[in-house]
Image 1 (cartoon, protein in one colour):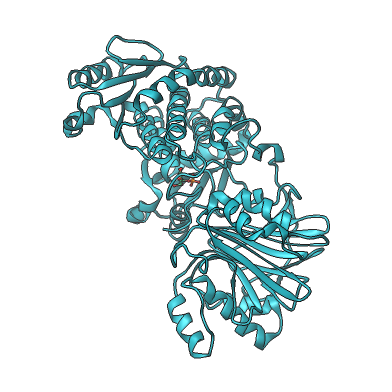
Image 2: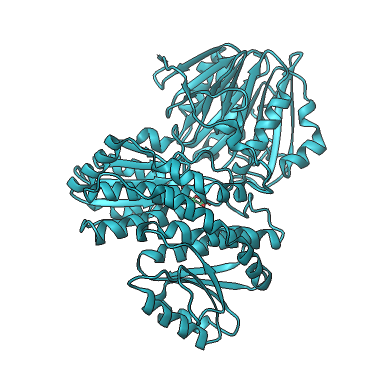
Length: 588
Ligand code: G6P
């Protein structure tokens, strides 16, 4: 995955692009670069390293010109080298391209272009696009038409922004299965992979559809479809405020987002009754029902399934998005797939959506990013309303997903409105108060090679989520599973001092889970209890407030998020940039 920003304005753009680059760095951080045009000269500066390193080395923000492109890279095709960084220019630096995605037929295209005399300087699939556009531009003499013609030859996924050395007045963008958003400013226009890149300058946006190509100048926008016909689309205002994307006084976005949860759970509960009722009606009528998502969103899906099965008596399967295709035989007209996602852009998720639609089934999404591909492809949408989640590890989006899906399940059960949100918000505040205790545990266990998380029933997905957070942020091996599964193999790995987090609220499963805790203790584990009731078996205890059982995961996950975050900090990892991961994984 990569981050793109382009800008054409009445003023110098390098500073604007630099700010935007920093905002999309979460999308890729192994290389960065920028290109501008000034006095008819196209200048490209780029290299391998984090944005700040490339800025120190190449002074990107000092580039001259009122038009430019910039990029942060997460390498897929071609290693992490200076030459493979974007922008990628064509032979005579007539065309410069930044790209997010993968061109599947780049080898064949490269061969054909090389046979025509094009000389390649990188190992990237992206460079093929710049040469291809250059060759079309020579024939068609029109930037937009040339880009349209070139994209028709591409197979795969792409969001591109293109600059032409002899046209310092305009940028061209195109997309297929990767996000590209137009920002409509006053005397400046933007192309970017994420609204965050330009929100400081404008909150008016146009979301492009697949196969569309757009040409922007400082005061004009022209969009054409695959058939070359002009498409008219009005800008829409995005609701996220700039304050939402500053780190405030927090050391990292991840910590800020963890601390926002008393407020974001309330935001998630503000939904139109009619829309929630539509979801509930569709779920009740569904001939077959699936819930899907990836990573943390999948865990929220497991919670939703649990209540649908147990309380509403509705059969429902939860499948990770990357595997939904394997269940295609059961996806037909009359089926419903509920899709959970923060970004609405995760490739596995979008693939699952296309498969669902191809088979005539209905897609209902619970998503944070309003203009995302998922939101636009869905038959019904409920938004998480939790503001941008910049930290790579999902935190506030997860608790918002739990709140929204509970609203839906309550509506399925015929309960008119979920109450108790104010109390939940207070309880989340109390749960954040576990930080001091968590820090003590971090000191004790930050160097342990393995961690385990167990729970029963409705809490089991929280054990999995606790383990996922710790892996993602601290790079410590962790496993989460139902406590009942422990005895079927994993117990063999428990030795003296192994930390095991046992999530065990009061209620039906409490006694059984205590027995598991005893078994763990007998094998030498340091059992860390997370519960509203303390028991002697625990070596350490984290008290979370008692809430309605359906909301218990929301308060239980908070100390686990804090544990993962603080362990990462103690191990000197940057929690906003976990290794090998990016915010929405746009490759399969
Ligand atoms: C990535 C992130 C996970 C996230 C998953 C799904 O793998 O590292 O933290 O849960 O994507 O993201 P989504 O935006 O679809 O919820």
